[in-house]
Length: 401
Ligand code: ADP
Image (tube, rainbow, N blue to C red; front, side, top):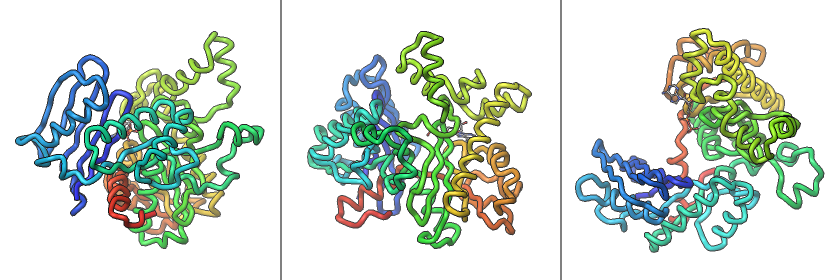
């Protein structure tokens, strides 16, 4: 069975075709600049590249191009689109309604639409992706996999904000958390890899990429996570500030004559590593500049490390200890310097990094043999989780938790 995974953005479609017999990636592609000049598609199948630049005014036209590329006789991956058994869609915000992946129906689409106020940038694009597939591949079932679903097990004390209760009831203001598919995958994989009994496990997952979040996963269920009602809360990120006193918003707005929306845009797009360093949002550039002695890059890196350490300490407290600390995503998987800085002086907790083992960029334990807390790298694979959920749903099997 072949499953298509789709991550639809406002002007892009990222996709993968996976053969579920052996979970092999058959094709990977990107449609870019939908609705803008210079729309293009790039797809790779076994080293063969399909490339085209053509007008694509809508997501529907983008999906038509994707199917043209996938069924291309020379550079494609399938003979006809009937070989694609189902489409799994990454959907950002499932609000409180979705605690797991679901088959798309009119009711599910309405619920995704209802959550647009919570995910104003992503949910409309995700819906466009779903509706385009319905139009172009009407016989193929669609499944929605939510970034927020895994975090729905958090207790009230972890997800409520300290604002009057009426705002939770009326406006659904609360912590939702994101990167749920990644936290779910790496926390489970860590238990398998380390031989831990998941039903009695305390895992801290550190998903560190352009956007970063941490999660406390107790007995296989999310107990707490660092992102909030939006992906802005938590540790310092590529361009996002992470947590700050909300009075900062008022202060900047009043002094710089900016609207709240403008300040939020500043906190989302011009802050974080980029804003503090004034150099780049990319951790590789920050490392290079910090290592060359740039003071702003140095402090940006220190702030990120500081934030991660704070959450690890907090989550260990919440879970009465920790069995494993997991690093994943672009920075977590590749940045050995940052991992060493984060894990320095954690021996009071029983976690000791092995500098040699820490050189890895693959699935591995990176703590010393006598470290009672296992520290490991687990490369994330959100597409695989989406594909597995999609397969389970369309074949009527239970979804793995
Ligand atoms: P996204 O959150 O957009 O999916 P990634 O998970 O790819 O992004 O993370 C991007 C970050 O990871 C960047 O700061 C980048 O410096 C870092 N990164 C990604 N790949 C590598 C690599 N091979 N070596 C070092 N750092 C990397």
